[in-house]
Structures are given as structure tokens and as C-alpha cells.
Figure 1 (cartoon, rainbow, N blue to C red):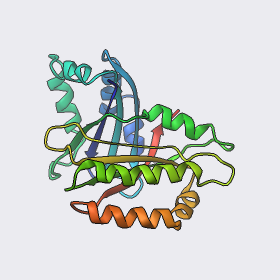
Figure 2 (figure 1 turned 30 degrees about the horizontal axis):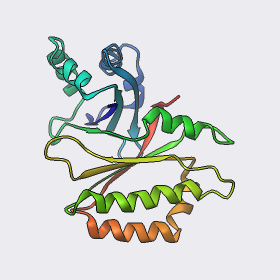
Figure 3 (figure 1 turned 45 degrees about the vertical axis):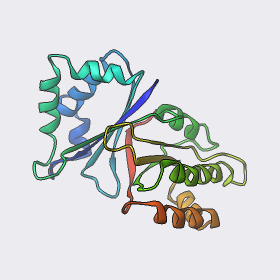
Figure 4 (figure 1 turned 90 degrees about the vertical axis):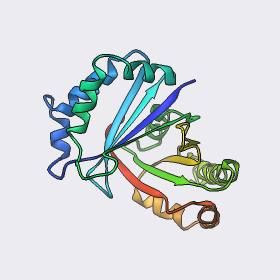
Length: 222
């Protein structure tokens, strides 16, 4: 079963997008290593717009086993050391890692977004929320939300979205939703709808705490 691994780095204060993009940078070396692993189907990355010191990796593996195999290789220790060198040592954790069986892969989401009448780099919303109730309750609310996104635009163009619960031990109550917005205006208009207000109220009642939300400025998305 395909699995999406999402890594969120808390970067050193001196980090810039330019330094992450530099061909000889440790970051680019890490991406090259990842893409060369058997079972790594795609990798997209970007930084937060609300928190530019958050680096997001979206990695598609053909199976969870492929990722675990990479973790057992002799080079993985060096890979981890290099990854940690990018992070702020005072952050806890310096890198957050989760795995999700997303029904729609990141590349598919982005492809759907770029097929709109005016294709351009989408704004990828990252929305993570933990629930104390059975996961099915929150899943029902998020399904209502994603269904509304499909019909929000008057021209019938759906707003791509997907969600799933983490499969990592101890984090099974944590749900992730990803939404590809055309621009901030489209996002703002959806926030005014009745269905969003109803779903937001429902999620507030089901949540174990405040959600983690950011918009990702994708540096590789096509």
C-alpha cells in the first residue's frame, strides 16, 4: 500500500530558501539520496508561509517497508546526522515524522490543481488535528468538508483535497488534511461558507487540542 511520509523540520534561524535550493547544499544532497532509494516514488518540498523556518518534505513510498528498508541501510546514520544539521537544536522535536495512507497522493493533488483554467503554483494547506473520540467521527466531518470543496467553485472545478489518519504507533488519533488552494482569495472565500463554519465547530468539539495549520510555499511541485 502506498504511504506518504511527511517530515517537518524546525530549521536553524539562518536558513533561507536560497540556501536550501543551492545545488551543493546539504539539503539538496539529502533530497538526492532520498530519490535514489528503491520504492521512493516522488518527493515534493517547501517551507511554511506562516513559519518560514518550517521545512516540509512530502515523500511518496510504494510501501512502508521500502522506507523501513532505507532506515536499515549503513548510510542511514549519516543521512540522519546531515538532516539534523539543518535543524535548530533547541526545537523539540527537531524533525517530526508521520506516515499517512492518503487516498490521493501529493503528485496527484498537485496535478489536479495545475489542470485548472489558470494553472500556477498552488498554495498547499497543511492541517493536522488530533482527536480524543473514535477517528470515524472526525473523518466524517472532514469528508463533509472535502465534499464541499468539490462543488465550491461556480464553474465546477473541484478544489483538490485529501485526508487520512497517521499509522505511526501512538499517533493513530492524529489526522492530516491537505488542500490545494488556487490563491489566498479562494481560501478566504471558502472560510466564509456555512459548511466551513459548521465543520469548524464540529472539529473544535472533537479535537484534543488546537490544530496545526500552515500554508506551504512549494519549491518543487510540478
